[in-house]
Length: 434
Image (cartoon, rainbow, N blue to C red; front, side):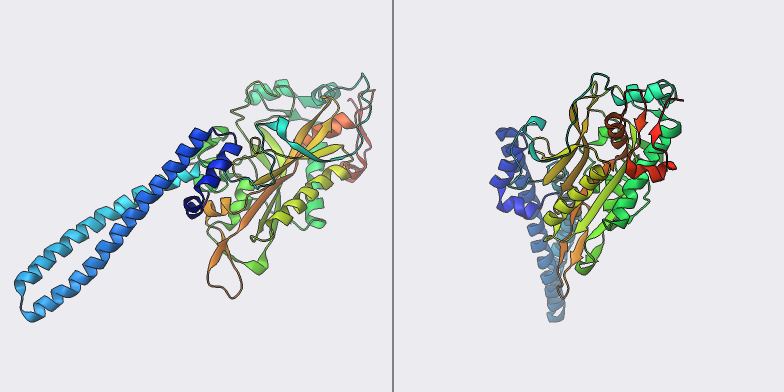
């Protein structure tokens, strides 16, 4: 959530930022005007409440003076005035809550402001390549896509998954199931032992306010799954970013304890509401998938450097797996709602003859912290500041499995297991058809 004080002082900057994010100039201007109007109404009301409260306090003292001087008429008049003021204040506090909510609701749907160095563009075609790692081999005519490989091995079953749960689910069996588990375990071990992240096992079901904190609600409600719980509901996490980041909600941290770095391997659940017809074959876009998430909580001065570090940690996974990839900076029109800057890491899939996203690493500034009320205190300072939050995939386990299958496939239909994964596979060097 953006700071209304900053918006009040920089309305044109917000209009410009929204236009960069592909809003029309008219829509952006009308949205900012509406925010400023709501802010003005709220501040005017608060000012009136303060004036009335000050008058009530003064009138209460005047009643005592009038009573002591024997002026009962004046005392009664003052008592009536105080009663009227009390009624106004009671009603005014309810109105204050209404105005607060109206402003908060309006702010909740405004995306974050991109950094100045983020390329301006409309969609993924305007993203800018930062680096490319690994050589792409000449594609022989026998190369297959991951679902063809998995089905031929007899270890990837979409038909039975559909009988159980419908489309966009997969059943993995035997060595493919073990390979996916091995990939996740390898990632966790790398991030915890070499990259300094603390492993966390978080809840997979969370409250609405937690989803609000990491900006899934209210804008992306249709992309979530919910289950009834008590008199309300709980949401299945679309990413471990949600519970990990919210571990610091409503807390004040000591600056010297920052950065906090956390990682988790969890299932993730997404309705994929906006992806009808996209990636309907195979495992690329599933309702349920595993992902290793990276989350950092930093102070305001460290977040940009932490973003570069986090991206390098995610890239290292693909380097160890010896998978070709490229890293791109997302343009303003392709960037996520809560991000100020995002790097996407795209792994090469020879079956598709294309790079496909396997990780997104984003720096959010204090955008999420304001929604969570997560702060830190600088030593010897009374005032607190909002923390900065970062999140990234380190990486998507299912997509890493896809990349391994396609890049390590052999002409005879077998799949060579990458060296780094063999200790997790009981020393096996290859997966072959049963």
